[in-house]
Each structure stands twice: as structure tokens, then as C-alpha cells.
Length: 127
Image (cartoon, rainbow, N blue to C red; front, side):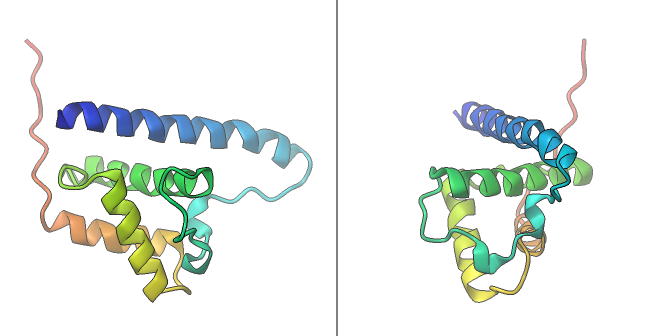
């Protein structure tokens, strides 16, 4: 069951990344500055939106992708003990308390908290 949730989470993260990367090329061609979502301030975090609303889902999936990448780097499964709703609630609370921080700062704070309880990733061997 957890693998199924994780697979859905990964699929949503990749879909959001593709949507973002696909839309940046025309914007750059027209001279519009493209910035990544981590630069957004916590004050702009859509804390009153449900995590399924598009304005929140895109940024939330950026956070989940960031944590997923950091998990791989640290060889710890930091997303093993949380789901999308709990990460959304954590970000809501953090951003309400730290409105001048950026989303990347919030993601690093979340990483630190999740790392403390994350199980090690056990490498699989191919037979």
C-alpha cells in the first residue's frame, strides 16, 4: 500500500516538473525571467488552499520533489513517514510562522525534521 502511494506521489511530482519545464521555454524566448518555485516567499504560500488546488499542488510537488532528491542524496527515505496532506499542513504552519523565509528555506527545515526519523534506503541487488 505504501509503495502504491509513493508511486502515485512520484508520478505527480514528475508530471508537475514536466508541466513547469515545458512552459518555461516560450517564456524565456520572450525575455521573461523564469525562476524556480523555491524562490517564492512563505508569505506567498497558498496556506488556505487545499493541497489539491493547482496553485498549491504545483509548489507542494516542488517541495516533495526536493525532499525526494535529498532523500536519494542522503540515502534516507525521508518521505516514508509522511503523506502529501501532512507535508502540506507542515508547510502551512511553517510558512505562517516564517512569512519572510523562502519555500526553499522551508523545504530545508522540513528535510532536517524528516531526516531525524527517516529509515535508511536499503540498496536492492539485481540477480
